[in-house]
Image (cartoon, rainbow over all chains, first blue to last red; front, side, top):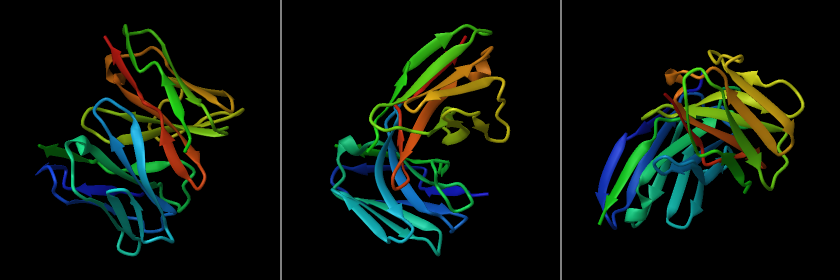
Length: 115
Length: 114
């Protein structure tokens, strides 16, 4: 059974800081890994998708890396802004290797960026 | 990416009544949609897979008679919470998977049973 752990559970930083969120998973036979953002009471916004053959993906100030063999991914946020405050979730396909939308989520990291 | 719309965004119902939640894929024909549940301060848990034209498949521990899923078209799946009780109060959210297997989620439905 796939298990996903995110560290830290919460993070509070001043505006402008660079920060790293961590995600680890127990079954390394994944097809891909996806990072999401969730604002309070809202749905999920897809941030980055990394295929198993890739080592990293970048979108604007966000960079996600994947080390499949060690079961780890990191989300790097550069020059953080108050608008980045949200819960960040990583998710991987359920055990079995294929995705097809059946995802196992981590508990999330609650990020607060204060002015 | 795919655009997914859920309705309603919030619903309050009395204990014992049934509530229907709609999930629409606006720009993508989805033969499969997924329903998740999120309790306060917890992460998302997959409840069931909605299959167009056939029965839904439920994850272990999810009561199929309580959570009725209908996927009558390629763009619409519905989740009906039957005989709702306060313990069913939760955040319900649906998703579709677009190529290459990127998941897109609706805005979610906050259900409160009183």
